[in-house]
Image (cartoon, rainbow, N blue to C red):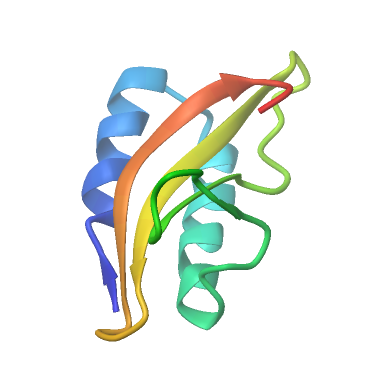
Length: 91
């Protein structure tokens, strides 16, 4: 089950004002978290259940990429978004 992803996406969109195409890329990536929440992300050191990574294909050509940090509870099969942000490479 995905939790708080759309709420956090809305906050990021309001702050970053990304293009409609970029919002679609991020939205598709959110859906992929249901299939495999560990794909393409890494565990945040010091936190057993916190994961972080860049959204593939979200590079804006200026060195910025969309990133996401979220919690995974294997026991409850829940993936809860913490935040989306725009970061610069390297991440």
